[in-house]
Length: 196
Length: 156
Image (cartoon, rainbow over all chains, first blue to last red; front, top):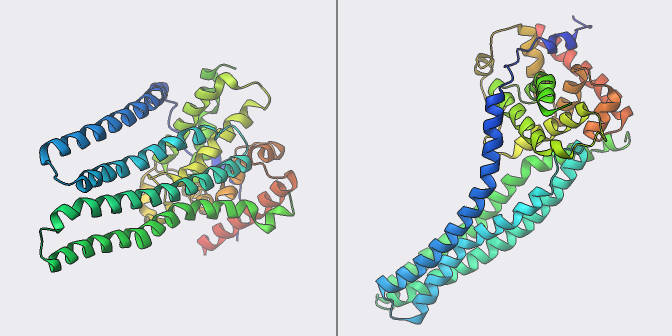
């Protein structure tokens, strides 16, 4: 049985790749481009949505105002997650990685709580807009169907939305938070706190 | 100290620290590289309020902690052990075991023991992690006991 293993000298035996200055410079240049790309992406998405609304109205020529409203609702719902993500950018900028691990994780926890709140609100509005948009859009076409087919069409869309709202959404949120919660628990453990 | 000097002096130490956290050669290399990119970003704001080592280790450990959130998540325990061992140059088996055992510890413990083995003073480890010095002392003792036990279990 071994008792005095020299961990420190074993630790130093790890082979280390050579410092690659070129790779580092590449990373720095990528970082500079990333923020520019984000703004560009947001602007392109906003313009594309506006163009899509106009094109659908022009080419499909819906007769009812309800159908047009439905299209606007559906396309607006696609933009919501994008704007929410954009609102998170300044929050994550406030996360400084030069502070201690405890402070870092506490800030991360606060950001995550706000993100969760924002996500919950965004998701709610997303589903409200998307569902009402689809229902409004479908009306013009459903009223031309037989009653049974109209019920089937509306019923299956409602089922799909319900599945996403009550099953997929909570599952995704839970999965996102699981690991961070476990890590934060380590720091707030009773075992730790009395020693601090 | 200029940035180039910081990079040359701390690259190896930061790489080993990341390696202790993830036990994956390529991921550790990425994490170490990201640490220095972040250090470059903040280098102008470094005012000597902390030791440069404490400063760079804080960035490195926070990057390691944050890596758990990413899509390219590190699941060292999910991979077959032989695959993990093939990813790095074949060197001392005891050394490889040490890194594997460390990467199996809870996240904060991995950071504490990696810094200790890198020769960082306990007061400095306390500043990096934000935990109390006495806590660090106790933790290091317990982690070393745990590692010794793992080595013994592996030998039998």
